[in-house]
Amino acid sequence: MVIREINAKSILSASKIYTYVINPYVGCQFGCKYCYARYMKKFTGHFEPWGEFVDIKVNAEELLQKEIKKKKKDRVWISGVCDPYQPLEAKYKLTRKCLKILANNNWPVVIQTRSKLVLRDIDIIKEIKNCDAGMSITTADDEIRKLFEPRATPIIDRINTLKTLHDSGIRTYAMIAPILPGAEKLIEMLDGKVDYIYVDRMNYDYANMIYRKYKLENFLADGYFDAVSQDIADKAQKKGIECHIVF
Ligand code: SF4
Image (cartoon, rainbow, N blue to C red; front, side, top):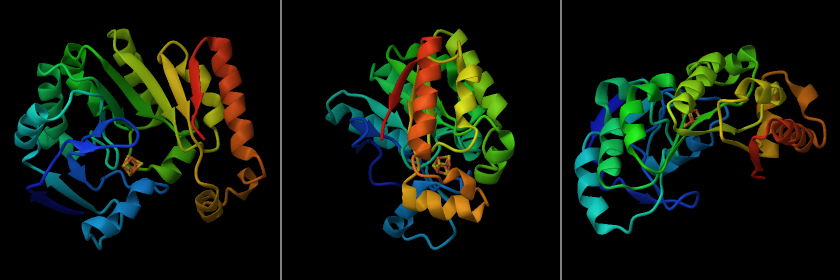
């Protein structure tokens, strides 16, 4: 793993998903096999394989203190092209420092992670008046998870993380994306732990390539993603969980 400390030029960036996004790191130690963020390598000049490099924006706190004064208050997504709670965050605390600034300035926040390390910051998350905290969970089957996300938090720990956040009065969600085999069993596990879910599929061409690589061709039938997402939506409706299919 190639790890570098860098000084970034900016930190509070425009986003198409929410108004702003903060990525405290360039690269992601989790290195999920399907990660779309790997394509950003061509913009950042990295030659190492995805998951094998991380640049740490050590001036993130300083930048955010300045930028937050100049920009119009709106929702901030943490994060878009890295996991804000990848293992290096335990040491560097960049996400924690940025959250503290957002809390002090009363900005709305959406957190998205695959790591139980988010629980470390529950004190600050509770301070933010408008904060949704979510876990990305792609399957209920931990053997499938190990194939695609071997370095990220196990499924049961992510579910328990959501429960702890939810029980603390924080608005929680699960991002079931990309749908992997076993995703249809997630609603049972998420019941009572989330306020809403998002469901998204893998790009078909990419899914064809990656599912074949992992010998999961039987999941590539026409309409697979439509059928699974509808199944998830039906199960969610029965449990009273708001469901958004976003493809
Ligand atoms: S945690 Fe997110 S950003 Fe990191 S490798 Fe996995 S999908 Fe990509």
